Image (cartoon, rainbow, N blue to C red; front, side):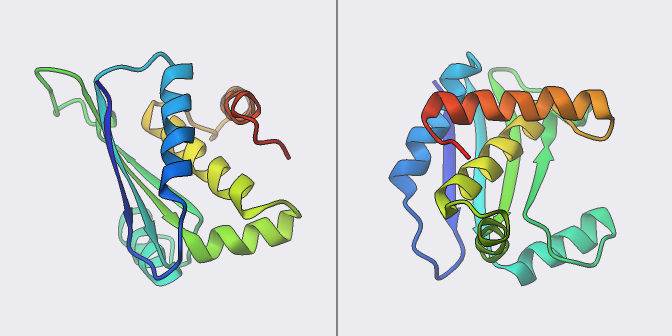
Length: 147
């Protein structure tokens, strides 16, 4: 059984039930069982502080994932504890407007992007980026969220 929590640390209204449907779809799509993780919605100041502390980049960003499986010293007796996904709601709104698509599309993209990072996907090299972004689009298209 998969377990995840969604925390909204902003004053913004967020459709948690719709997010759960998307996440459940993505977990099924990826054939994941017995995983645990958190999704935390924050403001720009909070994500900027996280970005500065952990990545040494003093500016807000859209999504940051902390993948626990990246640390080989952490072992679990059962299941997989994937980690945490932080998403800036103000940055998401700004990017939705900038890219000319809905806030639902942008938020869904950031959630799936963060989840794939927890699963070990990356986009530092061109080849990795192509694989990760193709997987994102397949999940989003399969769920019915198109550009």
